[in-house]
Image 1 (cartoon, each protein chain N blue to C red):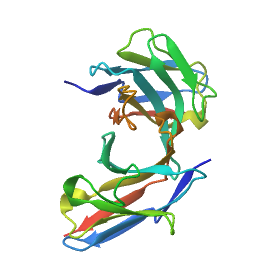
Image 2 (tube, rainbow over the protein chains, first blue to last red; image 1 turned 180 degrees about the horizontal axis):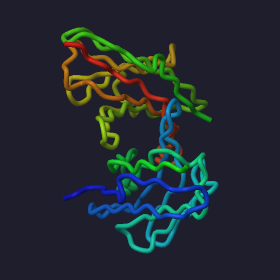
Image 3 (spheres, chains in turn blue, yellow; image 1 turned 120 degrees about the vertical axis):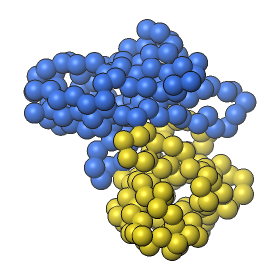
Image 4 (tube, rainbow over the protein chains, first blue to last red; image 1 turned 45 degrees about the vertical axis):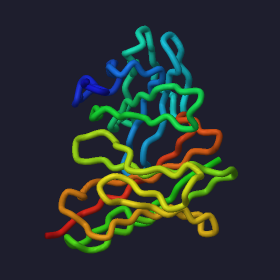
Length: 116
Length: 115
């Protein structure tokens, strides 16, 4: 199993450009998440999905959109990139078990995005 | 609302020395607490978790952490550091009932191990 993969690994954008980050998981997980990691701030949740065709806002959703058209993929879009969106973006997935008090998240390797 | 504070953004120890990474939490309800490790150019990996069972929790690679409610702390320790322990470590908190969407991460502590 590849686990959670992210495409691309690095990207440089100019202000105002758009792009899409792709996250794919092969563990048949129901839940998927997008986080951003900034120096001195840890990880913050951008958007998440509890199943195919559903998405919801996290802690810092502004400036981002997401889509979950297929269970294994979760896309993060930036319509008009801003320098404040320079960050490392992590995708994660987790299974759903109604009988479990905790469902571990599995993280991808990250995408380093720079907006000039 | 819940939050965690990691004391010290950088910690440096010698190989074989004790590792102590500090984490204090704030939560209005009983929390679940976690430590994650991030090796260079990799995603986060779960090191250990506290889920209201034993207060002393053992994780992978010889790490352990103790939940101290009176001190609102969940410090991470390892008796003897190894060069391979060099990484960034994140403490995280989630309120009960557990929900990944409500997890809050600390700012991280970068551990350096000197030969």
